[in-house]
Image (cartoon, rainbow, N blue to C red):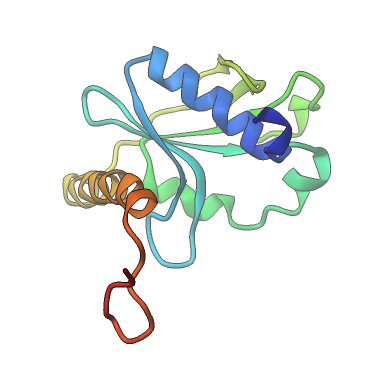
Length: 151
């Protein structure tokens, strides 16, 4: 299975496993608002929200022009990279996670910028709806173009 995953997906898997060990639940490819898609969002035991962007190479990092837009959608923002990534390229005011296919480790904790209560509530509700919908879409066919369920 690991062979079928792209490098960024492999990092996301290790990050998600690490978040689980920290007591978080996580979702990959989470859309906090239209036009933004984060690689991993973690929901902590106290309702804290972490966003983690997985970068598999220098070019992948340098081509990311949206990352600053993610800051207003989380309490802490991290980059997840592999052991060979030049971490000195990553902005100082963000967290760093070293990851591989199987696990990860926070090597620099991200500074905390607490979300407003209304935004936190909206994001936690969206997280819950997305988490509930994902297994359902694997079990149940999607509606056709006319809105009727395909049997």
